[in-house]
Image 1: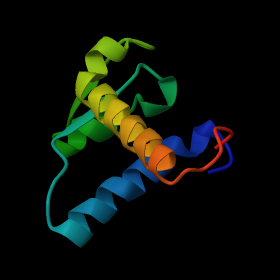
Image 2: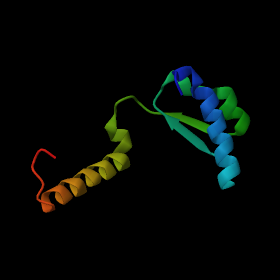
Image 3: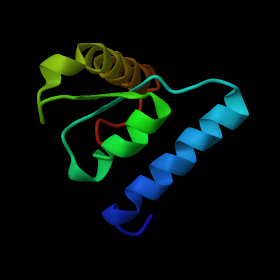
Length: 88
């Protein structure tokens, strides 16, 4: 995508792709109040529930934050065990 205005078309293609490739239907779309994801007619027509979250609130992403923290810890330990310089 070159511009944000192409998001709705890309989202529609993605929903169709997941329906065809994985033989499943999308049930919920969760986004952070960005205007390019607001396409209520598309969601309602396909029976998809759309949920929004508050912008820049990591408290709502606790699982993602924990996984991210774990990945950073593993990376630091691997770098430490490989005896690479601190720059890395």
